[in-house]
Image (cartoon, rainbow, N blue to C red; front, side, top):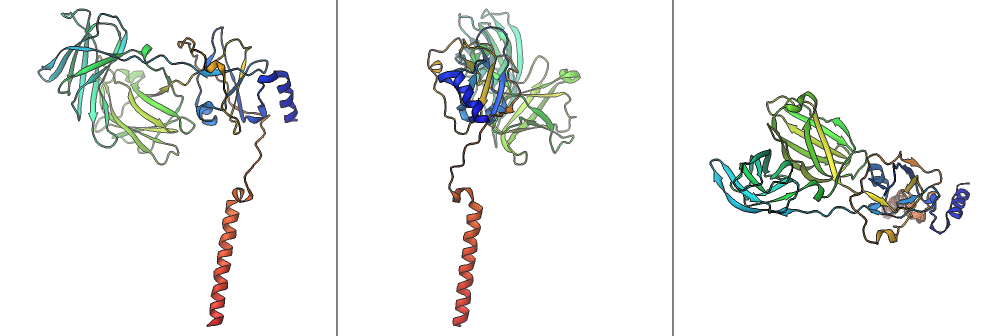
Length: 398
């Protein structure tokens, strides 16, 4: 019956038909309004599809195959600055940066400093005139931590600004040799990874442990933001943290160490690292201070959004999890990239479900490959019989 239904679908859909019996999973794509349709793969799609989504197929309302391609990313633009003055003023390293006459909006400033093994703070002021007056933009904690999984952050986070001149004052660092600036619109788009938070083992007054569960192994994460919410949002703190990853929640591997800060007019820069695990364990070292309340941890990863070819009848259906399915070849993926700023709405994917049409592929392995334990047992029994026969023969001869 399943084969008959699949054949009927193929006849109706024509030459671009997809054999639905080859795919283990299916789900709907929710869309709203006209315009290009794009969606963000979630953990289950990334886990159950082949690497690079090679077995992903999209069908429209008429059963026709819909070509797709990765949504083009905005080209990352990091703008270097010119240092007009750099030196020290008392305990601080100071520098005056010139971003040039062309206006650009930025929200991160990456400082270049040769200093290692330090913990400090950088305060940024902005002005449209070299002589000022300067407006205070923000203060951010910076650090360089040596040892296993060394960590370094010299990123100053500021509200979106376009001042030409930046006055930078940093404690901890010996000097400032240079800087680059970037804005959210000129960096690779990040998406928040859905997860559950579990109180981890080892929780004590001196240590707070949180485990983030993404539901599936090998979920990519590259950034973590730390904040306090609710009544604790205004609290001040400066504490070391440790981030570890695991796929079984037993053996954790150290990914990075960092520090999280909050003091008047400041916030921590995101913690950058690379992870491909199901679980992330975040340990906050409290020392003799009380545990922080209202902790919020937000993991992010680069967008892997998929853009669908326009002109197809909605709604759309995804098929994936096909062990025998090869990667598609679409002209749509080879033509010049469309406008990269297509908006991807959250929660566009419907619930994942097993396909009623799926036919598991026939097992083409040999008898030996299908029954390794039986073969091993037979060989072991033969070896035992051979040894026993030799022992009895030797005993008779003796």
